[in-house]
Amino acid sequence: MRRIDCHMHFWTLAMEPYYALWMTPDLKVLYGDYGPRDARPLMVANDVEGIVLVSAASSIHETAYLLGLADSHDFIRGVVAWVDMLDKNAAGDLRGWARFRKLKGIRPYLQDLPEDDWILKKELDPVIEAMLELGLRFDALIKPRHILNTVKFIERHPTLPVIVDHMAKPSIRDGAFEPWRRDMEEFRDLKHVHCKISGVLTEDGPDWSPERLKPYFEAIIDIFGPDRLVFGSDWPVVNLVADYGRWIATLDGALADLTRADQQKIWADNGGRFYGL
Image 1: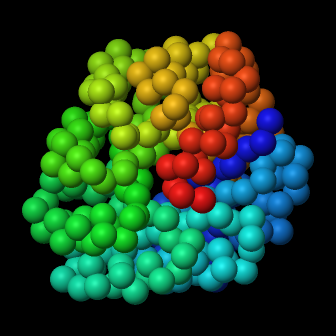
Image 2: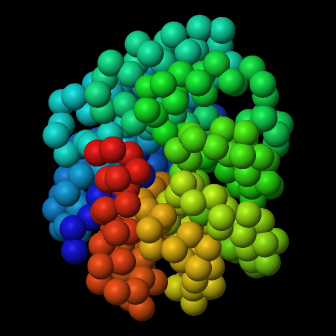
């Protein structure tokens, strides 16, 4: 089974100030450099042929760093970067960054913003229009409280390709299944919207189990179907509670009831199509 990992992070402590929102020495397993030399052995061991790098900092400096890495490594198929979408020059700046052919999308840090309806600001319209002009996608880094506002945003911009990161980060460890499931249903008929199966082990916590994850996997497969789901690892963040191989094995088990063709769509084909890799 060929795989494309559509959600991986690289970072370096040389840029530590830009990760200050979340990175501290207390996160021992994450507090260090992660880059191509660390990722490649894991990819080879798990039949992962390419990756999409995703921003981990609200910094244009990191955008330049990730795009530079992508230009230097063929296995980095695309980059989802950050720009200040409210800056008056954001649209023009984005047109400049889009000269990097591997720039595939933009991701604001919706989960950490104080306003749950930030994404509905009219001031964002110029940069959204630039994204549409440039063929870029929108990664929605949201939590359950953002789902309904994200749906309103999608309905306002119905031609913008959108992908929901980490299944909207359900609070698995708190057993909050039903409100999450109810709101996620709003994505069912938005046929151009995709969802990444990623990042959920950390939402369950260090004592995560396939049994607790099972209803969430079943729900997301039911809502989006095999044509709109995309594999991501959220590496190295997944190392907080597991490792790369364990996550892939866990997802492999969750997809076992699907046909091999549908599994292949989720592992590689959908992500390649969505991001234009």
